[in-house]
Image (cartoon, rainbow, N blue to C red; front, side, top):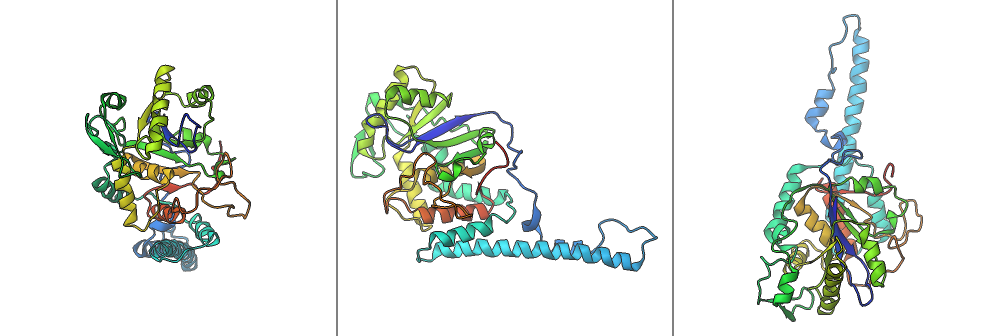
Length: 374
């Protein structure tokens, strides 16, 4: 497994936020199921009509009353499944409707929606995934543009920063040598990808084994300030990529480059790579057209978007922007602390609404609570 780890908090003078990737084996994640049984959402009126007849021929000894009883049972099951499918469709329509309206919704409103949505059987819909992947690729092309490389960042060119867009950085020979020749993620598509957020709901979730059995893991983490502790912490991720925002803010550049040189100096197996600012700008514009307007997209939303292009199956863990669980139990903002984000910096409700829509459409799967076992 290879992972990309996004470091969610600053490492003092050593590191600002970033991400780390790790790629693993090719065994498909089936234990908890990327693809559930078709279940209620696959029931159509045509299927319901079929359920009104016995599935197998009745014995000749069965009388007409027994036949009527079997038909009644099958009919009730079909009606129940059809009603459940209709309810789940209504929930999805409600999520879509709320994303269009300008009204701000409360935390309790979203928790109410999530409570209903998690009771609907999730079904992967390959046609929807393909359609959305194509839409993302046409605007952003994560395969070639997500990571800064020598192919998309020519020597001697001036690169504009993602957020400090009026400022540029010259791609000197020293910087050019830091970049991979081409994107290390161009060997896509990866089969099963887990995107691990930093929500407090991840604590005691028993999702570790399920996450680690994925082919590719995108993780988020907070590391300590000291260089030795930093190296010890990331050593646990083995042969991984450390994705850094060197070209997002000018103030991030020197820190990110220092991380690159630190890994190289100590011959660490992890490798530092950098977000490409043009990709992040294109991605922000893509989501702006869908109503997600903020100072900057959250790292989790960026990585989720890239994973939808790079992976056949995407499952999200630790994405929970609420202060309490469905059972009304308090939850810390992060699994490692309860520090809240700057007000107005991210459009978390809008982002989460989009994630719920993608879940409902079968494009990605969102883990709402605990996994079955660790």
